[in-house]
View 1 (cartoon, one colour):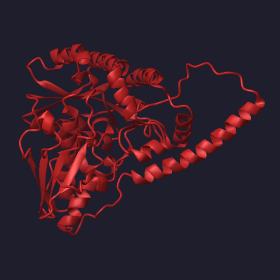
View 2 (cartoon, rainbow, N blue to C red):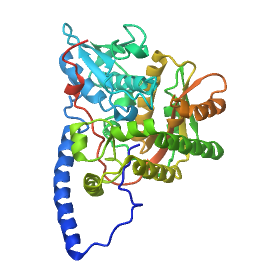
View 3 (cartoon, one colour):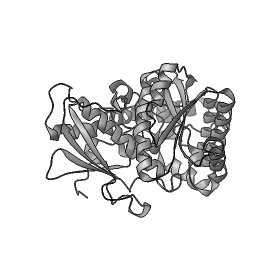
Length: 406
């Protein structure tokens, strides 16, 4: 969900002057402590910890680590960063990408569709960054066979070989745009999108024979999508298993983000100047799940008032290979929008595949995929409110690499 607040519905007792002084002393101490934790988290999860300058082609081992460093910033489901990297012991130009089965979402994503899409976003950055370094990324999808749900973490999703090629050009070049990929995705503080024909063309250019991309700005269609999104989000927040999974995924303060640098955080919901205060409040009085859900629904509904544009991504089939291909396109179009001064909110709750969401899932497909296609993503597009924001917590590249191998 991304936004957390203390429960403002609870009545507050009148405090004596001495009580107020005690509270403010405690707050000051907590703010100082929290500020240190936030700074530590920002350091460990900073956007890019090392960057090779484009120019002379680096050695394969250097290039391999560099593309992994960049790819860890790819968009991904719930910010779970469900990637496990295995380096080839015999070839320093090759590595495999696996799904990290210790970071799955069995309630909100029971078939791991969104998790597999996130493999594609990672690979899009690999492909684009490799070309910047003078390499062609030869990517073989599903080299060990399909990713059956029971085997999702034990079979390689992709085998990547970096081939020196100064003429290499990536179809997904925007996926590794430095300014776009290191920009925080501001949440719930929006102005309406300002998308011109040229940007529409760039976004839709990532469509393929298998992946369809459509910009929706018709007011009636947008009003329906906003209403659908709110109904779906409400189900997710009121259905206990999905609520508790989201609640458990949320990093409520700097310490939590440092200790578990994945999952949902409100670092991009508040400008840096006020983030410390929210960290302090969530340390002192963290919300309980029910209040967390109510706050999220209210803020989500308010944010939808500023949404006037959607991107709908659908596919002819719904296979693992197709889901990865969706991710490849998704990362590139997302960064195109970031580079143009927009942000994207994945309003795809209605596409989640658990029984309580079935009615809305069917409604989406009746309206947007009457030919039997599968709607993979519903993306709201907006312009972010101004202010400097922190990047979401990220796992260090070295910690995505599995020293045990396959």
